[in-house]
Length: 145
Image (cartoon, rainbow, N blue to C red):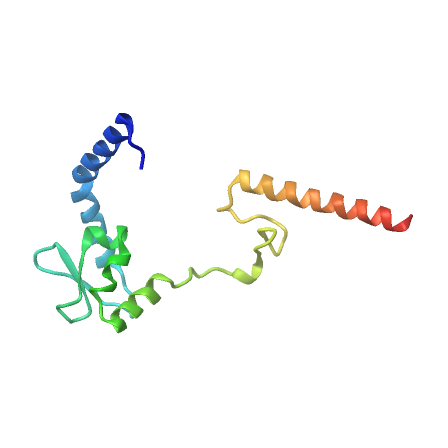
């Protein structure tokens, strides 16, 4: 940890900002969780609005604010079945056509790049590809001699 006065004051300011924005974040989280329509987990908020429960068992309670920030703390709160259910829900893959995307070159099957790939990454991939081709040509030329 940094111990300078500047970093300490910045840490203090971040804590104050986090406290100030906490109600907004919790409201957004509540809206997100209530909009989840998943057959794997059934999440509902308590009447207090401070906790939401998974399924129908009352002992499975999660603090809304810390659920996203510190998921590892909840190993001791969940039973094994509920924990497994939660992790499978969180680890579900996004539905994409992974067969059409080459992970090495990051190109689609038609040779174009996906729209979510930044231009900087595209330039980097092109540069690496060009270097590989040049090395292959150079090695091919040496073999003939």
